[in-house]
Length: 273
Image 1 (tube, one colour):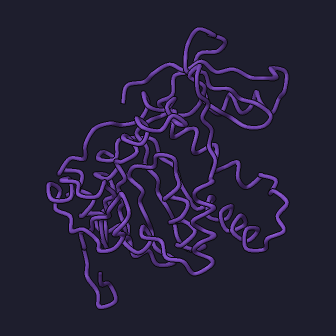
Image 2: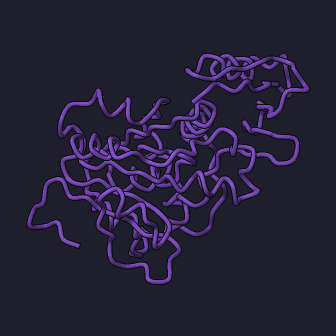
């Protein structure tokens, strides 16, 4: 994607911690920052309470709200359609080829356990930097005071999971082509983020930075070469993308607005729909 300049500002310019944070962002690949250009929007604000992007109307910052809810549900034994479709097993390597806001990557990292790993590809440099910073910051985050032991455990599990995610900026096709055959267990695509950005006012500042291109068949071929187990696609229910790209729709989610498609790369007795 083409670099889009972003103004970068510190709420406390003399704070060495914030200065170090600014230098870290400015070193991130693909990003193009300008210091103090107040008329340039969006603006990346670096504050003592966190980092957020501002387009003049809305603010966006990393927060794992949905991931916390889904991990909490998982700890209570509730099923997650994403985890079922991907058939994630502890210790596997999972590639999230369209990181977006990072929710599915966090849920996958939780399910993979301590020996698992998530490679997260994001084509938007500013989004990759924001999510990477947010994930790194979780390990130092002061947990909210929670009387509910399940919620407290979910937060701890989330923090551990976040440190198993490696965020990589770049085009997913180019990144997949350099990987060896069968070097990961699962490759996952969620191109729906481009539609979510258009509809959701809460993340509208990221609309101009998200990747709006439809998936290409050559990308799926590379994913099938890299994946040992399966390639998974998330799309709107009834989407023609499943047929166009050669995916079989995973059963379930009758009342959901989304479906998951699967291409099995290596079928074992244990892997069934």
